[in-house]
Amino acid sequence: MFLHILKYNFISALRVKQLNFWILIFPIILGTLFNIAFSGIMDSEKFKTIPVVIVEKSENKNFSSVVDSLTVGDTPMLKVEYIDEEKALDKLKNGDCKGIIYVDEKISLTVSSNGIEQSILKSFLEQYSSRETIITETAVNNPAALNEVIAQLSNEITTIETINLTDGNMDMSIQYFYNLIAMTCLFGSYLGVNTIINNQGNLSAVGARKCISSAKKYITLIAGLLSAYIVHIICLGVNLLYLIFVLRIDFGDKIPQIVLTTVIGGFAGIAMGFFIGSIGKISTNAKIGILTSISLILCFFSGLMAHNMRMKVENIFPVLNKISPAALIADSFHSLNIYGVSERFYTNIITLIIISVIFTIGGLILTRRDSYANL
Image (cartoon, rainbow, N blue to C red; front, top):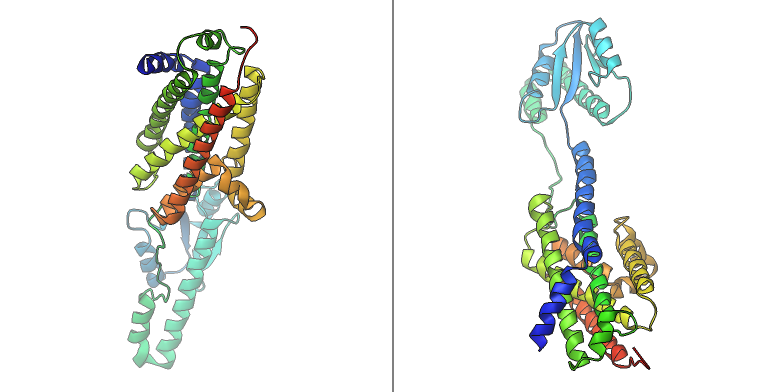
């Protein structure tokens, strides 16, 4: 009996096209748009070779040698062109170069605007002029120390060692994809409330028939929840595979824990919809509207629209982050990325399970109290 009910509830859940759109198609569309938007931002932040023109009014072999060393490599610092002043000014005016370097008794720079590239060129010339002055003064005042000074200036000496505190993905845009998965998990609440609708005699014809059938109500409810959960897991799996293998979003190497978080988050979404759908005998559209509002509000505060929103909530009202399924799901991904499989991750997972169990038991209790004078 149970497997028979499970089978037909599963088929029924697959046929709810408008609900599956929000659980399967919409997250794929939104994820693609996120990827296009954030990849453009990341590309703009990558270092690019700086086009510059040099106007030689006098010969400076040392400077030419230094410049030549900056034009080699996979991503050279400079792309240099030696031309006369008139052509150089035209290129600067048309935006074909970022600056003009004049090589004379004193090396100078002319730019048409302020920006990162112009600042790099200015810094480079200042460093070169400073080192050239040191070498010149040493050659005049202490020729014996000249070779040692040149050797020291030729080596890049730094007293700062870069140490990575984590091997995780430090790209801030990854937070939006964490919250995208959290949103998809919460949208499973539509399937949860659909289970209630199909078991309440006053909300649907299917529910009315089930109420007068010989099958026990708790069996039909559990079968309905399980079938909805299976459909939801399939949709979540497709979304996760799309993000990882098609969009190539870097979620790190903790794939089993990522899948576990998604599976439990999906259960939380189903349970939330089941519980809210069990409250009162309001219309189907009203229940779906309530679920949509709650899901989007929780996703907003977890950082779906602004990546730093969860931190603001943590400072103002931290309790919300401790009980919001969206925040718990997103923070589970975040903690995996930054800290690995830690106590924080397990705390989030256990809290999600507790919330899901409470929602499920609460929904079963509320549904058992339903009775109808007539159908």
